[in-house]
Length: 436
Image 1 (cartoon, rainbow, N blue to C red):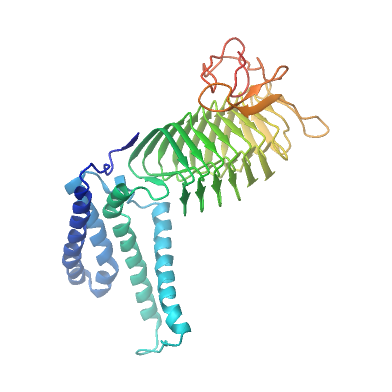
Image 2 (image 1 turned 180 degrees about the horizontal axis):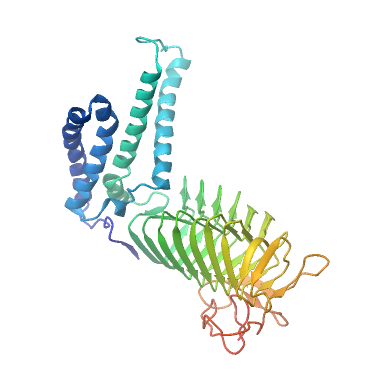
């Protein structure tokens, strides 16, 4: 199920509607430019007209089109002042300069064209004027071409290699496999909107930057329930998932396994924002830093009844937390990761099992924890079974006979069920799996 609301709605069976809307969008832009540019020149002079004309026209045409067709706001289609917008502006400017260079290179190389001075020497005032015009033109171009018209065509032609959500996105009982994104979110990218993913599988997706399976940015809100992220890849951070820009993400009853990133966060890479993870298995992920999870500066991470195991990294195999972060860990297994289980500050809420605490700074309620290492103290073996289908919607590591995690939670059992949906009874087990 795909539900996009309150943003631009999916096209109906009448495919002429979206094309008509795009046509009206183009006509409105032409009229707006013809009206706004001379008015701005009259009001503020030639420089103001050159630098502001296209920006004003692009914003105005998007506002008009939204008011006519959807009754939405500019922010509902992702047009607002934030880091992502500045990033897109920089890409647009770089792309325009690159396109110009590619167009000039062949004739210059073949000596069928030459560069020659045309007029007086360039002075600083001419240079700054040209630079301002280029930057303003790039901003207007990004607003125009990434606005209403582009997103309407996106709904008609399909999401190309990924779903990019800027309104409200609901996905259930779906699978994303083998998709690629040049920037972020190999399967799904949610920016400044809400995303609800239920019973969704992400496998073998790739991103050129962050979030091999999915990315959540710019104060977006996402809920992931019974989601599997397996075998995805990110060229930079977050092989499974990346979140930043004030995003709030809740992950429950899910599995993040076998994902890779080159630099940070093989499984999850939360940054500025909050990520709550409950009853979730994070296993077999790889990265240079933070094989399972990399918590970057400004991030808040809450782990409750999770199992983080068999992840690999050069530093912080299971969990890496940077200074200036908050990582609250409750009834969670962090063990059998390579070369060690965690690195950086961790605030324990009690009943945690840490295989080796080399590099960890554990504070909070530590009296009920089970902790091994550093050397010469031996690591704690949680006695985990292989990652497999043990019942439920997502794969888990079962606790084998003799595991120190069995019946080891001190206090109230919460949540009431484990990752599989099996009830937690009596003295609860540490981690995502409850022995019945």
